[in-house]
Image (cartoon, rainbow, N blue to C red; front, side, top):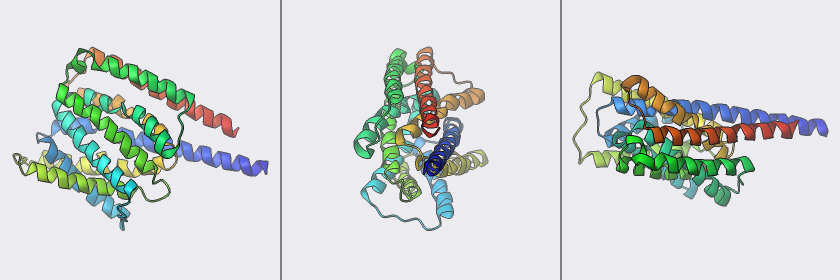
Length: 295
């Protein structure tokens, strides 16, 4: 009996590790968004729409036979996912890449609240400490008008953090189903919404570089990460997922700085460092707790 329990514990630990690695890979690919968006001289809704068309085609080929049940969890997660992508691209065009991504990472606070209420996944002590530190980091981040950003872009990025959290919680709620269908549906919604808005805006000037970039974004920046995201969130809690994904804001401004020289302000760096340090410490503590549990 004890050997069986130990085997189950090892399998659970292995699943947790696989989930964390998948989420890390997902976040690393996500982090290239700011760089790609800055390199395409299009209005944000054209970028969002065409990127999602490419991603939807890619995911449909992989999934083959998606099941659109239009259940409440599927619809909520798909709409929240679409809103997150639209808001994030808009924010990247209106503020710095660092501000856009780091403000979105107020999401752990919202995931903790929603996850506790909807999923009954109670945050642990290390999660609560991390959330308090994230709140402090957000206050510091907002000082000096958000590190040289734009108040409209910064506000939109913060709202994107809320929709990001809603998407994560309702994707996790479908962990026993096929949550990739929600992300595919989200890309369809994004393409439709962005397409309708784009009809009122100047048409994008298509070049070989911009066309290749948006296709690469659709496949490698959000298509492949969607598969990794779904794999990971089936194996770790909603809060662990968002905390693990913290590598995204670490690398996003780095790619943009290396390519364009865009630098965040001092308050943005300080607040971001507090946020990143808090969530990484929490993730490490959670993994260690899991290791002690199965020993």
